[in-house]
Figure (tube, rainbow, N blue to C red):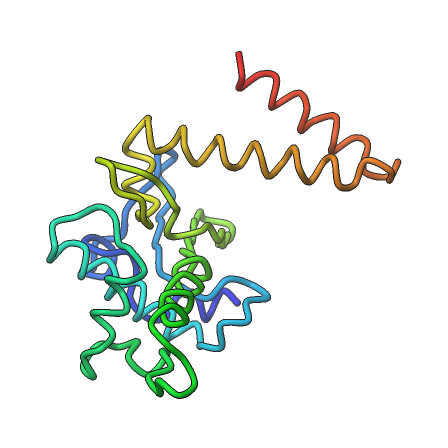
Length: 194
């Protein structure tokens, strides 16, 4: 896995131009995109990386921090778009709404791979790349880096995560083996709500 994560481009604007970032502890970090584990999207990690990079460049070109599924579909109509072949263009099999759902699936299933290197070992961490947020009366998918740069957007993602955690806790409350995890979820929820 680590060998695959090191190939291809790394995060936009920095590492793939040859300047890997250093985190606060001085460890070398590189990011790239790949497909989320157990995803059913049906593309390779290499494709996910190319698609993720293209989505970021599309957003940069449009000078926006949010991309909507219909914008992705519109961009994909061009045969030169890297993800053109990902979409079903045969209207007898799929229509515009289905292609929007394909775009949502793509955005939900691309993750960033961050490799944190110290002198002893490399550690690979996967995080979701694009999050659903509302900004300036627009709802769409925003890159993780932009979400983390905004207190409001971070709060939106945390609120959704807390709802998901509470839902998970309620769904598995009958399993005593998970009691410790449910207790920790409850503690975090109480702490963050204050």
